[in-house]
Length: 256
Image 1 (cartoon, rainbow, N blue to C red):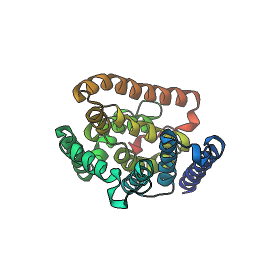
Image 2 (cartoon, rainbow, N blue to C red):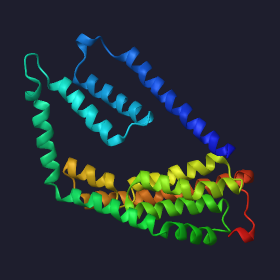
Image 3 (spheres, one colour):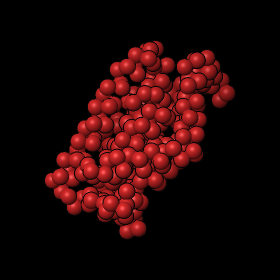
Image 4 (cartoon, helix red, strand yellow):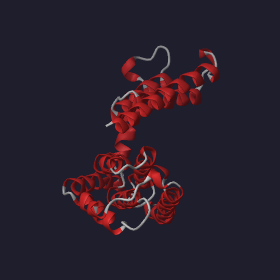
């Protein structure tokens, strides 16, 4: 429990530190209000998105609200009625444009597939199987975590789902086994981020649809780097445990 409290404390400290750095950057680098241009507004919006997410506001409503607010500021002109601001017409046009993209249909289907995989308990059984298979490898739990994250990423393509589920499933056993807190949390976070690269990646679908690039070609270009990154994560864990055995104690046979 003390280790979990340490992780929470560190997360809060890091979050407020980031907010402080964003505010300090605004104070030091932003020009006077009369000289602020659209690129400055974009940087302010990015900083406010980061701060809002850190403070716990829902991401969807944060993006909608800030997009509308800064769109109104950017497109608004004196004397124009509120409802005639161009940002409203732009929002309708962009919404219709997204609705007509067939490739976007894959996003909710991948999310649904990840939900089915999570609710069926497949990931739990997959992790237990990999844990037994990796029992002779240094840092077996961390290695099994990264492999499970890589396979789960290939099934969903969503970072948040992988990190959240693996954090609930894997972190308590790793801490109970005496694993280093940073090694445990880092293995989950690093493995969960593989969902960006290993297909099917929701991010690549969205990027391809917006940039006009073939999603299939993006998948072909991302799968090899994604697998290489997973292999490097595993290599790092193994080398670290060989150099510092106390970070990942060997589990008794009855624990597998």
